[in-house]
Amino acid sequence: MPTAAHAAVFRQPGAPPVIEPVVLDDPREDEVVVRLVGVGVCHTDMVLRDGHLPLPFPVVLGHEGSGVVEQVGTAVTGLAPGDHVVLSFDSCGHCPSCDDHAPAYCHDWFAYNFGGSRSDGTTALATPEGAVIHSHVFGQSSFATHAIVHARNAVKVDADLPLDLLGPLGCGIQTGAGAVLNELRPRPGASVAVIGTGAVGLSAIMACGIAGAGVVAAVDINPARIALAQELGATHGFDARAGSLADHARSAGLAQGFDCVIDTTGRPDVVNAAMAALAPRGQMALVGAYGPGDIAADATFLMSGGRVIRGVVEGGADPQTFIPELLAHYRAGRFPFDRLVRFFAFADIADAIAQGEAGHVVKPILRIP
Image (cartoon, rainbow, N blue to C red; front, side, top):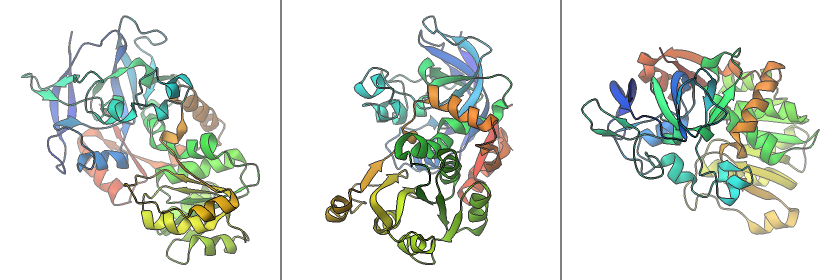
């Protein structure tokens, strides 16, 4: 039987959401219905809200959900009503990347996560009168009391964990941590610069401690964020306006530059200037959102030192294994991502978005009643 719910519906680009009654489909054989408990607010939600990607409207955004399974489809195994889950991105499950446990690089990733529908073009949401509302943003559309998701993007977690806290593990937190632990994999003692100390950058800094990096430099223009980064493991904090990244490397005693650089800002001018701070055999991870032609790499500089620039999506993670890994680090005190969050009531979603966009909160989380 269809599920009655409420959702924050974005009816046109740039407009604030309105919480409205909606109706969810019955789950298909490979889907589950999840009652949301919490959902993080991510910068990508704002990119989608503002129409920077061809997402159809009206739509329910939200892609860092956590909650309790209420219904499962007939073909679902490994999940049952009552299970606690974190929701992450969707993938096709059968392309070469998915077969290689790399669903973040699914060959149909954009269709599954930015299409505003299931892969067959159908939506799971409607108004009580039957009008279509687009769904399945990142496979979930979790700015709602309930979401319908494919079983593969629901990750079962232990029931003793604070479920309302866990949603951001599905995107922003795993993106930063995974850029370090899955993609760059700095050797013990290596030097890492993290440009931008939002949720993604701070997660990367905490992961540097897990990896055993030696020099960890936090680069930002916000002194409070830099201070927090140093509390979370950064050995150095630099004001991005006070010199180049190469200058900061020299200040940290790194005459040849950093072994690893992570850009979370998505700003081409920042990335292009930061390349000069890569040491021989250094790696730069591009984690922000960039446009065609934004990155101007000097091939001679890269090749002469064996330097690498790599794009990173969702931390290169397989959420089914990486989210439990991060939770083990959290339990052990090595990954205190709870220090990044502030909770808001679902009814205050507009304020949560505003506080996040203004930089007053690192990671807003909506508590769903």
